[in-house]
Length: 321
Image (cartoon, rainbow, N blue to C red; front, side):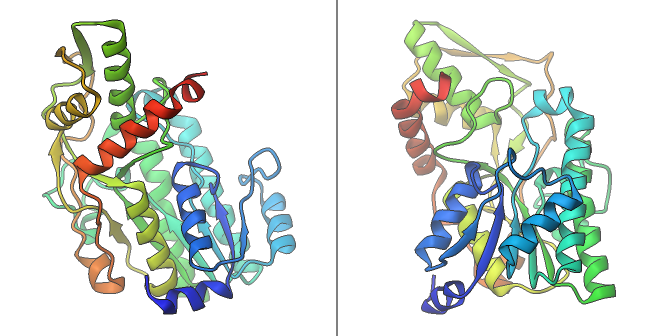
């Protein structure tokens, strides 16, 4: 990042919701590296961000110039199927109240982090931002995706009526060190890493993987995602949503093979076709992010997977305790 970034962030007072989470920790670390000295991370035990009175108390206390809203109730396909109501309510109410109280209390900029799950289930590849309203999201994560998509509506409406500077970013599926490796709620890459490592250790001859393997996904290394969010937070001030992605797609079948190679598992893959594939294809058009604020992903998938597997092996005991 440029020296302009350093001088910009040096004077910013920033709240990062979800700043203790997987992506949030990296955003906070990168902000610190850019010279940002005033960063506040609300913890859920102290700040229930679903409550307007709590948000008001936080904003009065911290007096932020900017809020980067990363906090979310989120999980993989299984978690989405078990918690559709919770994921809808928590994500919608958090975002709605944070944006409203930020407007009322004079926060200068709000960075809303959406999700690729907001996109319609069936859409030409790559997904362009202008196609976000062209259909209903994939059913298993629609409540989460739609709750997050409403923050785009709110951001645009508030900009139009109140001149409130809110931007909306759409990150693709993230992965990297310190991800969620819990089998009940993890996404595909950490779930597969854990599965392969466990099977290798137990001497098992096969692993079972959900679906057919034909679905495609796009994966963005967490450091790249954080960098894209920070660049947008500094340089982007427009109503249109922006994709933050790596700009490629890979089949689940191929990602499984890369993870098998990275973990050294020697067995077979058994596809459990009774389980859903989720959205058939996912890949973002990343033209707007590059044009508007110069963002382009840097970490190749194989390299990112290698780092993620190494991190998991070094922290396995702590992760699984």
